[in-house]
Amino acid sequence: QDQAQLIDGKAIAETIRGEIRDEVARLKEESGGRFEPGLAVVLVGERKDSQTYVRSKKKGCEEAGIKSFGTDLPETATEEEVLAVVREYNADPRVHGILVQLPLPSHMDEEKILMAISIEKDVDGFHPENIGKLAMRGRDPDFVCCTPKGSVELLERSNIPIAGKSAVVVGRSNIVGTPAAMLLQRRNATVTVVHSRTPNPEKYIREADIVIAACGVANFVRGDWLKPGCAVIDVGINAVDDPTKKRGYRLVGDVCFEEAVKVAGQITPVPGGVGPMTIAMLLQNTLEGAKKAYEQGK
Ligand code: NDP
Image 1: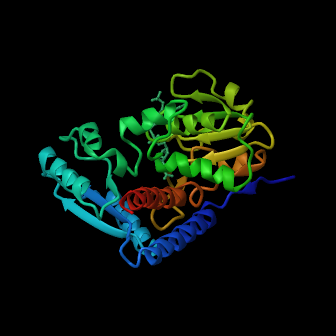
Image 2: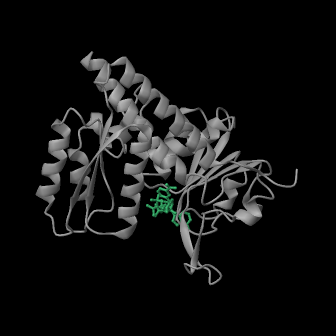
C-alpha cells in the first residue's frame, strides 16, 4: 500500500446529519407535531470567527429540523447579564441544549458561566460534572464534548478497532485532548497522553495504533514518527502563510499530512476531517437531550 486511506469527515458528518434529520422528523410525527428539539446559542462580542461558528451551528440546526434560539450580547455585557440569559434558557422547556460560544470576553469568568448551564442542557459537554463523569468507571456523562466525540466516531464509522489497541493523544486540553483520551480508554484502548512537557513524544507515538493529534502546532507529528499502518485523527486547525492563496494563508493540521499519508493506514485530511464532525456531534447531543426531555414528558 502506497498511501493511507482517507477518512472523509465531511461525508461521514453528512451521513450523521441525515440520520439526525430523519430521527427528528420521526419524533415530530410521533408526537403529532408537539415535539421539536431546540438549541440555544449565546454569543458575546463581535469576534468574526465566533460569528462564523455560530452561524454554521444555527444553519446546521435548521437543516436538521432543530429549532435554534439565539442571544447576541455586546462585548461590553456584564457577567451577570450572560448568567441571566443562561438561567432563562435553563428554565425554558423549548430549549434542550445551551451553548455559550467561547472564548468569552476576558472580563468574564468562563468557568462560572459554563457551570451555570444546567447539566441536562450542557450539549457542549464542558460542565465539570460531565467531564468528571466521563472519567469515572460505572458512570456516564449526560453529554460528551463534540470534537473528541466526533474524533472517536470517525474511528468507529471507519471500522478501525479501538479495544486492545495502543493510542496516543497529543494534547491535554479540557475540551479536546483529555476527553479524547478518556473516550479511547472507555473503549478499552491503552492510552498515553503526550503534551508540551513530554520529552521525545515520538517515542510514544511510534508505538501507537491510533494517534489523535490536538496540540495546535502546525505539522507537529512527522511521518517517520508513525507506526506503519496506524490510524491518524488530526484535530488541529492551523493557519499558515501561503502567498499562492487568495486569502494569503491555508489551513493545516497538527500532523504533517504529506509525510503521514505515506506511512499511516488511515488518516483524516485538514480541512474535511474532524472539523465537520464537531457540528454533527453538537446536533446529535441536542437531539439526545431533547429525546430525554421528551421521554420524561410523555
Ligand atoms: P490548547 O491550546 O487548549 O491545548 C493544546 C494542548 O497541546 C496542550 O495540552 C499543550 O500542552 C499541548 N501542546 C502544545 N504544544 C505542544 C508541543 N509542542 N508538543 C506536545 N504537546 C503540545 O488547544 P485545543 O485543545 O483547544 O486545540 C487543539 C487543536 O485542535 C488546535 O489546533 C485547535 O485549533 C484544534 N481544534 C479543532 C476543533 C475542530 O472542530 N476540528 C475544535 C477545537 C480545537 P500543555 O498542556 O503542556 O500546555
